[in-house]
Length: 445
Image (tube, rainbow, N blue to C red):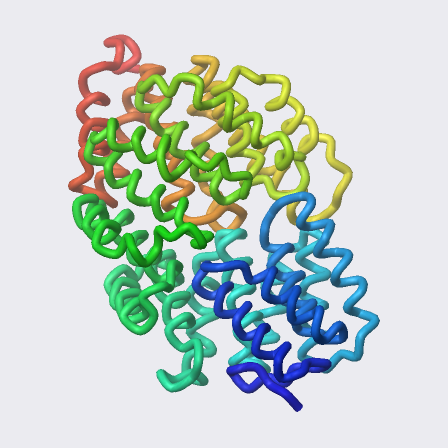
């Protein structure tokens, strides 16, 4: 039987279709090109090519966008009518869980899947992204650690697995090994955007802003091409470095340029745009009418049901644009939702207090903002991206404590931030303000 490049059998594939499938997986691996177009060509040649349909369902299911989720469900239903191997049936079982809003169950299903099929690259990368979306720092690391002994530098795709391991090590706080693995991965495959961004994360978490800018500039030709799905996120990483150094004009130039110039409707890009504008806003900078364009783009995504992390970022844009009705619409959807799945639970337990806290901040009710955000900030292993992405919560909480005159809380939070990033100018400023700006009566209290 025809196999993929890692030796996994491909039911229903011709040699030509298998070659297109491998190219689609490569595009998925390095976030360049159009994997869906490639897999559609493979299906056109071999309509009963099971893994081609499965790969497309993974790509759409991981998009965290309502219409893509609907399309993935349709693909899964159709694929079940094809002849399935045990490996392919295992993929479909995991996809059923994912598309039902049961992210952790889906990720755990792929954990077990890769114990049996350690060189199944589609399952590895999809499971790794599920770990990312549900913020499981342990499984981001250990999913890859479990299979690494079955890979070698001679195995096609080895550098990609090493890049995923780099990001898992970073999210688990093992920064030295994370940077080493990430640099090895990009040496082997310079176009690997995930490995590149793993090293950028290390520098962000260690407060190495100058190093981060240098890393991004030196490798810009490898990650900034027009066909690069991950380019906006990497521009966002560079923006965080400039913001930490107080280089606000550069941040605005990057936002108006490569981050938002093309008005992307991709959820990942819009999340980055919202988070960057909110940080600028929280730092006291006037972002002007930028909120309105971004808020309008969120309208087709923010449904209060598909993925709470996205809806929380949509709420940032709605708050900035003065569209409080849309914020209330999202809150109502999560408070009153009838779904009984993990996504609904994330919405009720975490998205609601986060959005309420950000709304209170926008209203100038800083004490309520601090009260809501202080508990809601502990969302690791719940939902929501990386430590760097979730830092917008602590940034907003610290700023709320400062503005609300909660000097004890402000000083404690600033000290916490400085313990992690002692050279950060932003964190030093937080601590200085905590000691000088609180009203005397509140400081004593």
